[in-house]
Amino acid sequence: MVKSLFILLTFELLLSALTINETTLSPKVITYIASPDETLHITAKRCQGLTKQHGHYKLKAEERTLQCDNRTVKIILKEANIHKGKIDHYKIGRYPKPMRGLKSYTSPQHFLKVSSNKEQIKLSEHFEASRFLCKQASRYPKYLIVQTSLINLLELMIKEAAIHGVIIKNFVIMSGYRTPSYNSAIGSSKYSRHMYGDASDIYVDDDHDGFMDDLNGDGKTTDADTRWLASLANDVQRKYDIKGGVGIYKRTSHHPRFVHVDTRGYYARWGH
Image (cartoon, rainbow, N blue to C red; front, side):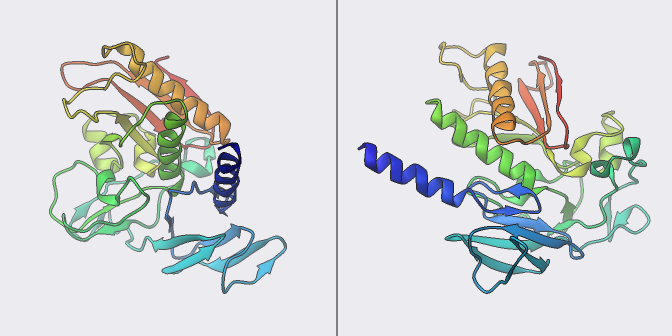
C-alpha cells in the first residue's frame, strides 16, 4: 500500500513539472491559451519534436498539440482584435490605462472566440471556456479572455480539497470574464481583474440548491463555509506560489455566499 502510494505521488510530481511561460500546469489542465504573437518558454523533462535550448523549449505560439512529460497539452490561440471598442458586433468597451504601470493591467489585445452556445472549448478536466463568458446580452459569436493561470488555480483548489477529505465536483462560476462595458454597467471596480480574464467569483453547489454547500462538515451552511473556501484558495496560492487575490462575500438577497479568486500577480485579501 505504501509502495503504491509512493509510486502515485512520484508519478503526479512528474506530471506537475510542465511549465509554460512561468505557469506550472496541474495534471488536469490540458490547454494553454496563448496570443498569436506570444513566444512560449516550456520547462519540461522532454517534449517530443522540440529542441531544448538553455534548459527550456522555445517556440512561437501556434495551434498545436504538445506531448511533454507524458502529458498532452493543446495550445489554443486567441485571435480576435478590438476595433473601436468592439469585435464585430460584440461590445467590449475601452480598458483603462494600466494601474501604476503594472504589466498585469495592460489592455488585452487578443480574445478567444466562442462561436455558438454548443461549442465546448475544453480547458481542463472540469472547465470549458463557455463557463467564463461575460453575462452581457449578445448573440454569438462571443469573445472572452480566460487566463491559463486561473484555470490552473481552480483545478488545484479542487485537488487540494480532496486531500483534506472534501470532494468538490465543480465550482459554480458566478462571474468570469467581464468586458469593460459590462463591468462599468454593473458598477464594479475600474480595475476589476475580471476584465483581464484571471478572476472568477465561485461557490460550491454540488447539491444544486442554489446556495453554498456545507464544506466544513458542521451540518449547516453558514459564513464559515465561505471562509473555508477562501482559506482553501489562500492555502493553494501559498503552496504553489500563485500570487493573487482572495475575497469573501456574504449572502444577500441578490446572490449566495461566494469567494472571489484571481491570479493578478500580487497578494490581495478582503472580507476576511
